Image 1: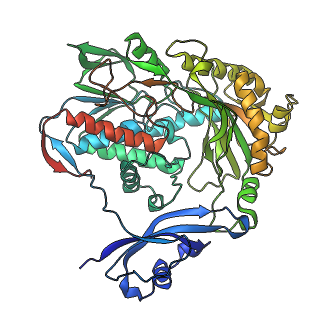
Image 2: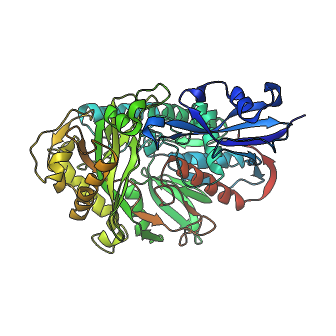
Image 3: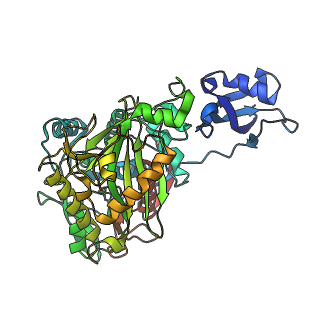
Length: 537
């Protein structure tokens, strides 16, 4: 007979204890014997680094027991609660499956596809870029030789932009599907630790493997993936979507079209604008990447504990509020990672950060970005934020000697508004080009970053030291437009089209995009008759 399920929350653990005998920890804290507890495991593990001389973990342990615990004396801050019921992720299957086209194989499109299959709907999935193996070759060619393929790069291809990233799965959505997304990643090859880590990450090489396994499973369930197939146009009949038109001119009939193109499919946004689809301008952020030796960040964040085997490469999160509607902050911080070239258009330079699962590059990097409000856009045009991004990406390309290197500048030079041409060692490929980064960004962004950097140096010692390097530009933090949808998930102007994920303006990372894809799949299925219930496999 199973006992009651409990969570022992915020239990302090010394470094290394989290890898030890969890059952012994329960006996020590709650009393009794080892036989009183079953199904013991970690539910959540977060690092408490508020006191540099006493870094510890705070753990939530899950277990089952028949005992009563009313008289237990718990450590300060620790709580014992009944565990909530596990969410039920089973879904109803439809009796008559509609014809569905999904555009994009990023997290939104891919997880939408998995969920549609659970409903008994077998979609056709269009991806403008190639399969993973071919995509990796094209990306490596850009990084090693500076040769860009506009259809196969760190933005386009199987898995979307998140495929070349840190694989961070942290999100603030709080949606119950978050746990489901993590469980699916584990099912398809991610390490089980992501289920309890407070800041879960997979690493770029492992998320690539997960994406391929998900796609192969989906193909086995009847989904059809069409790679190297760009969406060119849409067709309408009787006021609803009727077909997706590919670049070759092929028309693919559909009753519903899930539009999850990612935040860099600018030609898709231009096509939608020609069709007068309901869209609105949206704030975003832009700036630079900052890179430090990882050892510098470890010392600043961990103090005397730096190098402890229970501690991985240290991260950070920094924010500097600069008045009404102005702020600078760190973005997509990559411990033990590298800055990468993420250009997707000829004549433009874009950088981002990436980490592999071991986070062992020896360098830390993060976006250092400032708010860009719609009032900062150059016009009232719906796509003016996109035009702003492109203008400054082209400026960065020119600053890099009209190459797909990255313009680079020391933090000291940036703050002193001088370009000495001296840059420190780095890991960027194909090359870092000494340049004046102040000429690669709007003045209002430069001013926010310059004001915030000294503040960040007071929080992380050495942040603005001569070991810090800036590379530019980071302009694709999020979509500068939102494709407006109603409560039914459909475009408010074009029924049957379901804007989805980060590119449509409804997500801000891998997990939130995946959650949005699942939600949209359920809304698509809601439009069809239902027969029975089945869980996603």
